[in-house]
Image 1 (cartoon, rainbow, N blue to C red):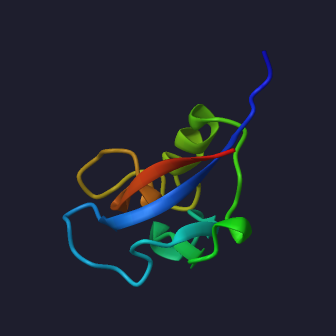
Image 2: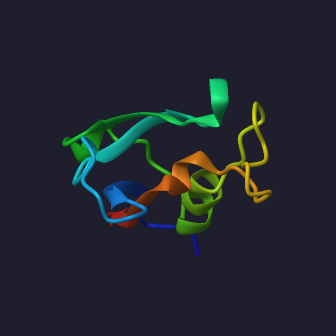
Length: 93
């Protein structure tokens, strides 16, 4: 059965619970492949302008994308810059 919804990523806070300029907004675009492996994020409060995914798995895959500029953090773990944000996956009918 085909999906009857799409999924968007909503920012809740940073991974430590601190406020960010993106809190409550929906992710429009991101680039995890920037200098120093820090993610660039564009967000909006207009859900219709958010990047829409076909399902939760696809959104999760993008959220956990490893930087190809700096794929490993100083602690040896994978550098997945967007996971520095706590998110909610929101279904849109």
